[in-house]
Image (tube, rainbow, N blue to C red):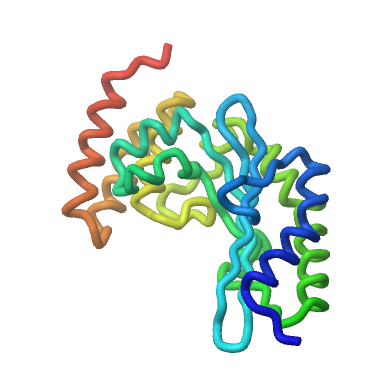
Length: 216
């Protein structure tokens, strides 16, 4: 029998809940397919999203980390709506991007395929996903992920203007010795951005703000 979206979400939640509970991730009351684990600086997330496409359901697994100190400042300069400020992630990536296929989605139509998919997601989390989240729970690791190659698109922050804003904040917090180089690199990127008229003034304000902050 063909499943509907609610059936798919319920079955995924049922099969994946023990996986997350074992790793000390709590299911969010507002979203049964969003699991979080708090840590001192913020939280780690695993989010499963289901969308319907013709006769199939496409399922995506995303993992991310929020550093409150980064997000509380970054949200003052990005275009993110205020209602979402408490939920933004500093980095967020998908199963597909982690395996080198950014457009990958699981495709399911019945319970057998749901079970196969959940086993694959479980294997990924156990062998790579949870380890990635644990190893990058330091802002210094995020600095390396985001700021080592500023000229390249990042698979850990989808929105390029947000990457420039957050990357610079992280560099400042970590006292990255290449901070001034990053200021120029991200300014150049935002000059080419489709929303440059809105983002560049915000970026300049951020740079001025960060220059007034002493991290000593």
